Image (tube, rainbow, N blue to C red; front, side, top):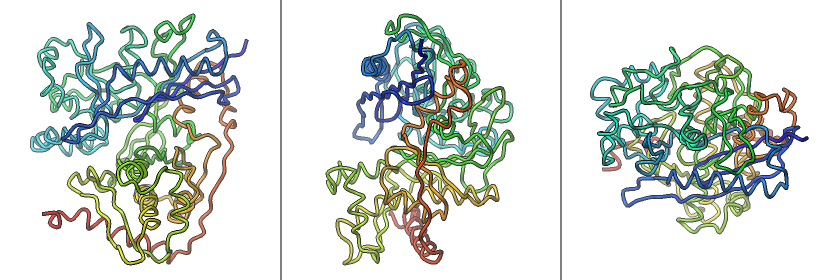
Length: 496
């Protein structure tokens, strides 16, 4: 009997179900989109109940499309959009409010209060993360302060707080398992990276009780058994859980210190494996846990960007500049080489390495050379510039010059973007034969943990590459122009 591995990749735009055969090759994939709920204040939310329904539906569709016997599925791995925060009733299993999406900055006042109380340095030192509304700590606190009934239930320890992985685990196991993994825990701003436990004092600073948070387990542990709400003829183990960027790092085979990947999605995560010892960044990055795998933790340095692939969507949906993302490559390649236009996509502030919530998006350097093609090119260029910012910070922190960057995600299909990225980094850019590295990483870890796969599974991916062609002087001239544009976006006096 063949043994398949099912992977659920629950991302910002939708939920993917992926089926892999016994050699680690992708059989089929099915996607189900969910609503992006954005109100007049710019708050971004998702319906967690819809996400659960879509998870089951995506799994149903992929099993049907593959034409396999559902009894042949041996294990389930889950990767998830990180930082998106859910609060639900322990007794009923129902969410109290829409999930607050990672992009949403509504909890900025919570962060200011915690900063004013003097917790800034301790939070950064213990959790590896500067206080920011980007992370779940302040999102959970906002829910307690603003969702009717939440505070009262919390006093009775009747609430669960978790990221999307914990929500799905809880629901898929019928409420029997309330758990998260090391990678997701490390992104909450509540997990102490030195003691590898929830930090009770920091939880209290955000008005939370550490006892109400999920149990933290190794990323390759068994998180419970599920039949996917009756979809499968028998229960299978959920035997890998990882935040999506961590899953992509694993799927890329970045298991050794110094190996680095960039995931190009709605936003982007650039992540370097730094090995089993904690190290703090001095250049605006955060330290997190890659995973706990085979009994050992690995740390990462990471930089997160809010608007990368989302910039292309903005060009398409909001400006109407292109009919589809695919058009941007030809436009960029036809743009005038001497145009000096820059776009800084600080629509909701700037994340790493600047951490400026007050920064504002801008387009600068426009001349009579600037037209449709040049504006389209700025949308792609700003993605590569932002990732270069992160990589250069990593190089400064570690003292290592990056020789290769492993990349994944939809925008990696854009040859112009990949060549420009290689040029800016002066490094080889490696693109795997499949773009679904988050789902692949969760599947590979689940398969390795249950004995379906051996270490040779990583050879299931072939790679194409881009080599740098830009001379050093041109590279630095372009990058200096980007840094000048960022200074304009972050000069607060100019926005009054």
